[in-house]
Length: 151
Image 1: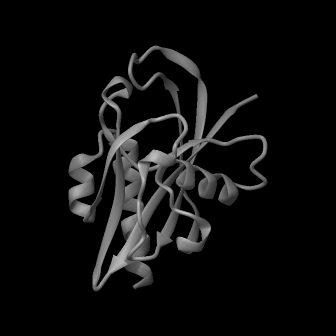
Image 2: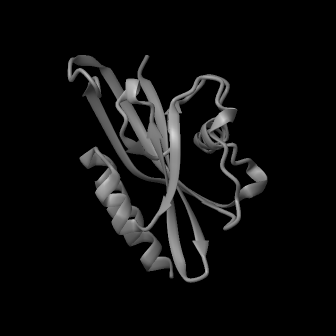
């Protein structure tokens, strides 16, 4: 059975600016910045349901705070552990987008399994300097292009 995960590019529009949400993993889990995301559960009836659940579990953002869902805009897979670089069973990742209300409140304390110790809202350019993995940077480039086309 393949391992499937979802990563969510969370963004908000504040005045004329677009800001992206990044979460910092705990030092024991790598200490790097990333978008929310995680494993798709058997109880998730759709990719959108998995994205909404993961975002809520990691940030406290609920469905009522979501303005728009952007379906899969980037896919990737990897077969090495992110910390040890040792081979693992292949993980398949769908990356989706969520636009949230500009005044949405974030709380990392909702997660019953702590993964992150900090969050920031940053510009596209700043996000690119903070993200560790090239795949995440590639996805952000693609997403930014999508946003520019729509505006």
